[in-house]
Image (cartoon, rainbow, N blue to C red; front, side, top):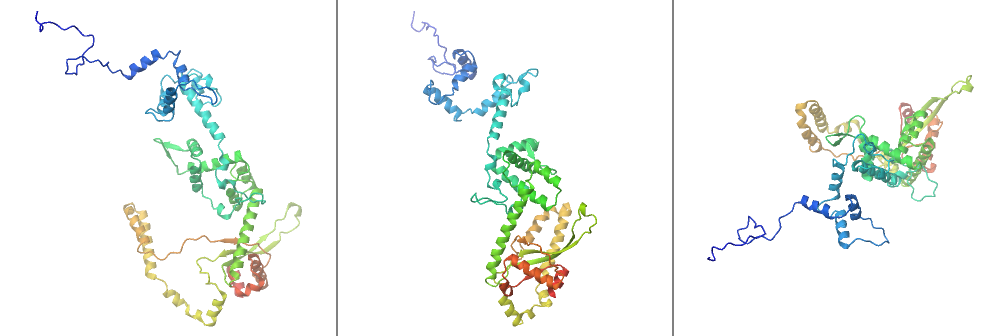
Length: 476
């Protein structure tokens, strides 16, 4: 028998079909992930999967001996720190949405979902157990969260006794609150609290939060968060409670309305608001006197006065039915800061020198009329009418941007910087301003309140404004 005709013995190893070589392949076939998990479940030698996971994620107590190996600790640490391909978020979604984790509707676990009172050890199914755990976790986090100490303005005080340094005292600027600004502030300071209240109050459309025109939820969230802060700390006056109480005082709201707002946690009490008003009035009055004293030293005027007479009848109480109501006549005054005026424009020496030199004769009605730019005035009025038409007619909407550009470019004049008029109410006196003697006494009293010394009254210009009766008395 020849060598070529001899047959080769059969090999127990199956040759690879993709290999062009006649040599057999010694590499085993690649197993799928399902075959691998099946091998692990048959070889891990634990009674059940729960015991395996408890041992895998063993919670080591500091000070005790750690039975885990270095490989065990490194594998678990890599996964829990999110350094692996599969994150914990993937497993949570798999646990919660697995069809075996949902209990039957007739079981006790089905009604235990999101229950804050049922212990986790008494819940068998995974989905209700996760929901109860998340509910308790969020509740404890909200309870131990320091809401009352995260913002400086939430320690706003009506007054201070001097024991606390750098205390935040209520000022007139704090009364100019806006709910939209408070909503942005609360959202930036504590996104967790804002998100939780938004879930309760906001409506959604296709998964996105929408703001309704009627009763927008950010305003309701501000009031709710403010009342939450008060419920935890009754001594905290937030950005809403104290200004809202002053607003109720200015509106002369009924005492029952104030009491209801106070019980709901929306505003503070009458005592706190009265202390805040007295503190703000005294502080602003001291600031006015310091500034007036400073400008009067240089013979200038920085403030003016607006007068008004007050006439009212005193109420007659029940025990005085035979008495008639008495008419009370008083004079009120409001000091205001002169705006857009140069520091030396109101110097009394310059004013007297101008009068002596007859410089005031140059300012006549004709000169004022000639100084007006009538062409610019007509162009602005015409453009305003064009803008009204563009807003009213839908076919002209596309011209609104161009019209606004014309206002900012071609028709731009030197605009006055926007300012807030500083007002300071003075104490009302019982003088009659419609009489010459009463007007003199009233002006001297108001100058004294503003800090103008009597010997310096002749060296400053006094700007007095009022209605027709006040103006006629001043002219006399």
